[in-house]
Image (cartoon, rainbow, N blue to C red; front, side, top):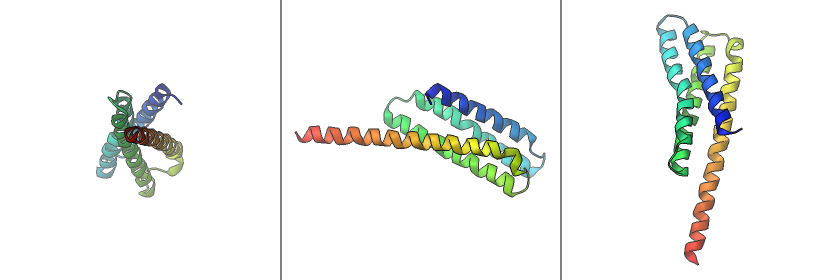
Length: 130
């Protein structure tokens, strides 16, 4: 998956989160969780776009970690919606699966970037010893 495909996928995810939050009950719980999930569910796309503009690999990695944190938080809110009985699981099962898939993609990218940075670090340390 290339960066543009992931940007599109994260935007579609954000739009689905927005629609979900609009469907929540108009009570204190629905409003509170709705606010939280809007914030955490829309920020991964924005943070990923920012990561793609990163000034360095370290900057890219740090921003990817923010995407990971926000996706994980969004999953928490989705689980809470189901476990509290506000939403039936079958209604957001696909959204939860997409959240997990996006999280796996980001974690894999983080792992790859860490290996790349460590490899560069090891290579420069070897060169400095010569």
